[in-house]
Amino acid sequence: MIGLRRPRGHGARQAGVSLIELMIALAIGVIMILAVSRIYLASAGGAQEAEARATLDARMRFLHGRLSDEFRRADFWGRVPAAAERTGNLTLDNDCEGDFAFGRGEEASVATADRPLGVWASRQSPAGCSLHEPREEQTFVAVRYASEPCESAGCDGPAISSFYPFIGFFSDGAPPATPERAEPEDHWQYGGSLYYLSEDNDALRRLWITGSGLASQEVLQGVEALAFRWHDENGWRATETLSAAIMPRVDAVEIDAVVSVAVRATYRETAVYRLSDGREVASAPGRLYRRFTFVVPIEMHRMGDGDAP
Image (cartoon, rainbow, N blue to C red; front, side, top):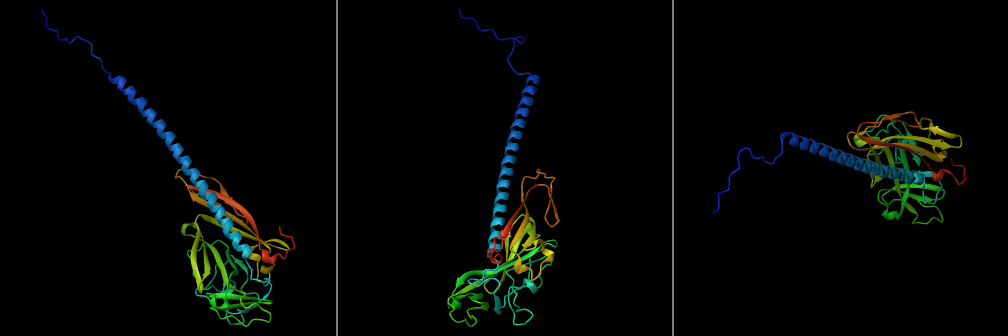
């Protein structure tokens, strides 16, 4: 005869998890989550910093390449040496005044033999032209040159005729009379830029010749400061000592730059970057900085004497 199974009584032992065991498990889980989170955040922060360093290196290379290219072309006027006499005249929309002017007016005070200079720099802000939020403490630099060949009838806007012994300026396909034995197709588009630092995005900007006027363009963000020193037969000199007579003898420029890029908000630098002109750049939270210095020869002024620094 089959008997009935006896039900378990209240005194039977049951399997389960106690409150203490549950709290211990939760504590261990929280510790593991915190450890994994810390590892993840450290990894993510390291990756973000590595990306910022790569961006900073790219900005440094771009700045070096851009300014090196511009200064190496300064005062190149085709087949005519930089010391050649400038003739003719042209006008540009939104042009600057004084030694920063790219155009050449008909007035004797403007159309002198030393204007426009291939390179001009000043700590004084240019007058007469529209700059985009320029900083107060900086050096403004203008660079001018023959940019590319063009046919006289097809030269768009300002151009030059490169006929020895003159550099003739003209506009819109109306070149001055050519000397004997001149090549009639030896005309060049007139190029150049006025570089300065803007408060907007800590950017390097320029006014550059395009068409019949000057246009504004952002060149590179994150340029905190630029300092310039100029070399001639007497050694290195500050921008404040330059003049229209001295500038054609300058054979090299030293450029001292501080560049930055945004990184994670918790990143901190304590360094203060001191430039060659005495100005200082204090680091700000959440930004990665780099200072670098390079020298660019102004080839058209060196005359092949091999005495560059």
